[in-house]
Image (cartoon, rainbow, N blue to C red):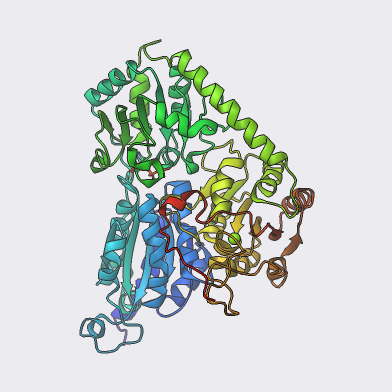
Length: 570
Ligand code: ADP
Ligand code: MG
């Protein structure tokens, strides 16, 4: 006898997740397989989603976050329950802090047992644990809600100020079955996930009026401006008005660093002297001295373009807020600007030019020095020389001195090519960002890493080799955190807390996975190794010994480092 139900086809939660992702153009998963999502990784790959498997969830999350920043599509990270979930949380929190759109999807254990705390395998109330670190956190409790859950996650990640979203799929929901018709009806395709948010015309008018009175105007470009992909209009506004601009680190290259209006080489002077400042996708946080004296003039007036209304007045009064998406706001400014209405005064440009020249000469002499062993400047100068005619190459940069000096030495010429520690000044993003950038773009990446920063995610060179990604990792080995020459104040034989290993053979690590290892002890060797490594297109690691005494404690932010006045034990 024919059984009626057996002729109805049955599907399950795993298939629904994959179908919902594909329907919404989420074509890549960065993750670590394990209970209860192992079969999700297999099925996703079988169905044409690219799966990049990592050694640690934090790097998978960082790769997802940076792919979100580069593409405006939420990067997807997949983690297993409890510990895997928590490992991914640092990346999710970092992505929320930086305004990068990402979704961390995690499997989770049996809710009935978790909620009664009955000691389930990998027991954790993940959704509630995620809430403080995520822009939004959702849990899907019924298999037919999988696609609506993903739709909510996508919207939350990319609309308004982007951020990290947590999406929880308990194992039993993934395994639950339903008939294919119900499954098909449950699918949701997100329409207009990033709706334009037009600024109010009166806010645009007010901004132009404030700016028109400026004697020393300055534009600050932040990574929100880079994210917005409004490159041509931002450039047109800057060039039409002649206003000098200062890029925040990840906005470097939005206009080329050698643009005549860039104040990068006269940063402190420009900030302190400006009388009207236009913030475009940059927050007045610690990276900009909270908008206060001594970095800024107390009398300066601020115009701020941001999508997040509550960002306005967060640190100091904003005279002219323009709340809207940056593409719409900049195009509205351009449309309302009358020819010749705003023109940066030449006296101001002359003063800036003088300061720029003085600082550029100072930098040139630092770069020209050829100390043995290399210092940060000579090594970075060699890299900058190699990259000068390769503007399409992504530069990932982390470390303390490696980051701070790297930001000043490495010139960028194209938008969204510089990826670094960002808003938190976090270490450990390097390999994840490099992998995410290489995967979404197919373009080469050079990751310039302090030895300490590299250590956080160094095992991912295995991932780089497994997927044959064109990433060259340069380890600046000064043998420690900040510096490599600190002493143990107890008089004992353990190394000092900030000391790592200056003779470590980092190049051998990548050889273990089949990549190319290089050792470069002077700028000529480094330039040659980098040129060869980039030409080969293969995964490579260049170990660069740097003078252990060359760095400064905490790099350029030693003011944030409290001191104990420790004395030596006799
Ligand atoms: P930076 O560190 O480069 O100064 P921040 O991360 O501090 O940059 O600031 C970026 C700002 O840009 C955030 O306040 C965020 O709300 C805003 N932002 C991000 N994307 C957009 C967008 N598409 N339109 C408008 N503002 C945006
Ligand atoms: Mg170091």
